[in-house]
Length: 233
Image 1 (cartoon, rainbow, N blue to C red):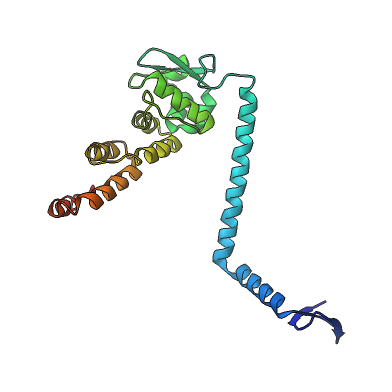
Image 2 (image 1 turned 135 degrees about the vertical axis):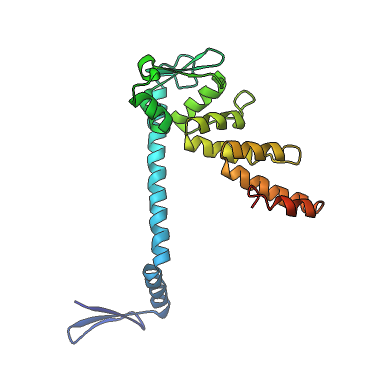
């Protein structure tokens, strides 16, 4: 059965076996706009991305609820009473415990470490002589919860170093964004060098923008010359 929507006064009648519904012009206009949105490929893609994002948020919230439930019965990674099937040993000789499957899932380096015949697989201990227990505990806690609170003992720079070393991408991105917040003329050179050493792409861009915005007026020739450097292009 075919239906035709014609903008008139809302009456319904049959003609040659075809039902015709008469509707108001305003309703017909709204239906026409809706049809155009449905036919628009960009609108469809946006709707699909929005649904995927909503589904992801639901999953993440579900995981967090399960983690909070488990933490009610077992101490979290930040607790000194937390235990796992492996440990990290920092430069201050304090053991930080974790579970192998969690760390493997977040780091390609740890995955290779525990899946191949390396000493860490046999001993269950990973020595990290260039990081403090505060930094290691922050790394471990993030791998479990995706949450981190930067402190004087576990600064964004120090955490980024360990995230870069062990290829923990999500943690590295969080640190990268944090380091972009306090750029000033006193630290811009140090931050730019740090960003290149540890491949902090957002920080590189942020220092470049700051440099060009705040130095170009006072030192235009210097900026022009430095911008020829590939690091500032």
